[in-house]
Amino acid sequence: MTETPNESATTLTEDEKKTVRSAALRAGALVAQAEPGFLDTFKESFAASKAVKTASPEVQKLVGGGLPEMPSGSKDDVTARTIELLQQAVGILTAKAPQLVEEYKQVVLQSAKDVAAAADDTSHGETAAIGQIERALAG
Image (cartoon, rainbow, N blue to C red; front, top):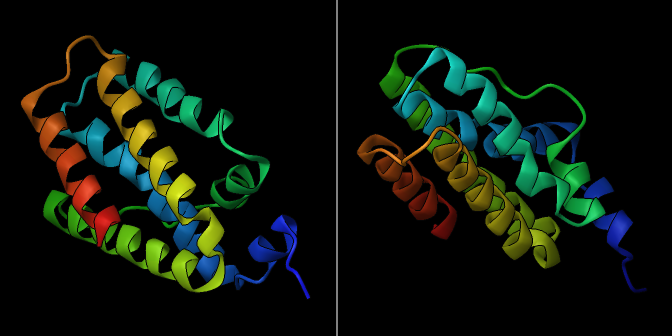
């Protein structure tokens, strides 16, 4: 039996869906926190969703709908947990929806880059955060 694209997303448990969604959303937040600014936050929020809007409906479904895991703890704790979630998300998709892994990685990374570019020049902190995201997605 051949699996249709919509079936692969539904094979994920609710916890797995939350992990995949949380990882994607928190990656953009990781970049945003690297160079905080009140007005920049609004620009970055809109920028983060731009890459998701261009994704396939299945990837949009993976990263949308439902609440993500909210960050807590120190900045280092939040960073470590975000990296952990990204690695877990790639592992989940590799096991249960391998046809979505590359697109998911591209969307997450592009979203992070869009956040960095949203508020003028990309800072060194934002560049470092993007590097952490790239390494986490690579495994």
